[in-house]
Image (cartoon, rainbow, N blue to C red; front, side, top):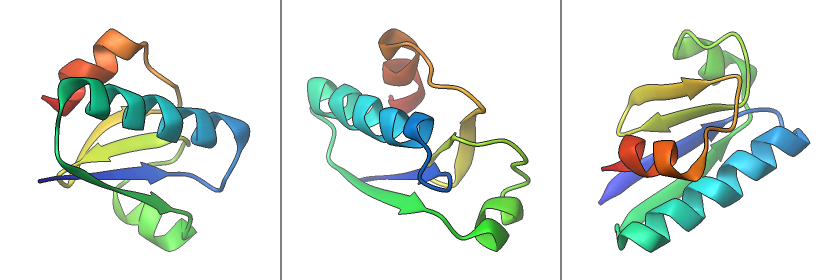
Length: 77
C-alpha cells in the first residue's frame, strides 16, 4: 500500500493536489492511504518550503505546484 501525503496548509492548490492525486491513484488501481499534512514543523521536516507538496512513501515528488495527471500517475507508480 502506498502512503501518499499532501503537504500544505489547506489552500485551494493543496485541495486540488489532493483531489488530483487521489483520482490518479484510483485510475491506476493503487491501494493507498492519503494523509493531508498541515503541521508546518512536519512540512519543514521534509525540507519543503513551498506548498502544496506531494510525498509518496516518504519521498518528496512535487513541490509548489499541481502536476498534470500523467505526471502524477508516473510519480505514483
